Image (cartoon, rainbow, N blue to C red; front, side, top):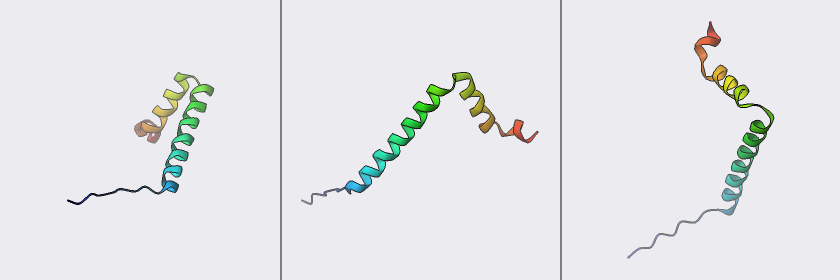
Length: 54
């Protein structure tokens, strides 16, 4: 019987936590600063490339 032990480097965990913290704090800042309509119109302008090209 072979038991596999999966180890995670603590530095990798710290980098992942830092990334998640930065993303969540950025989203929280954006949601607090701008209204929902401003955010939706900004996202539409980024993802709707057909209107940008015309």
